Length: 93
Image (cartoon, rainbow, N blue to C red; front, side, top):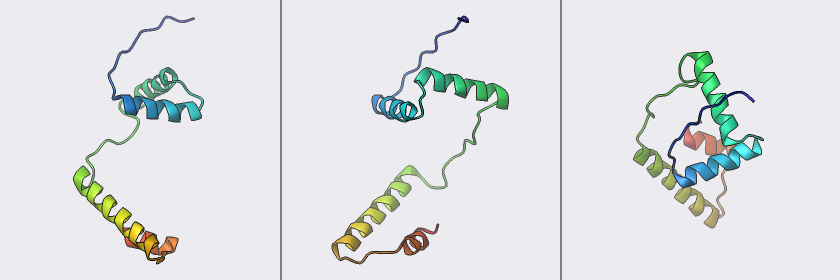
């Protein structure tokens, strides 16, 4: 077995659990995923994905999401279902 180094990092427990659940479904351990990530950093000579600020603040996005959830709940309560096309148009997708 090749020599290895240990990497320590702190993450929120919920993030760790959710990531482990997703990685498990992919057949990967967190260590394997981190190795893949670090190899991609080396290959790309930087992060292997674009990092930028979101177009809107987290609070704005949450407000829009909560409003859409409220609208959906009202729609279901009133049996006024929307088609997928109508939903996409409403969301600007």
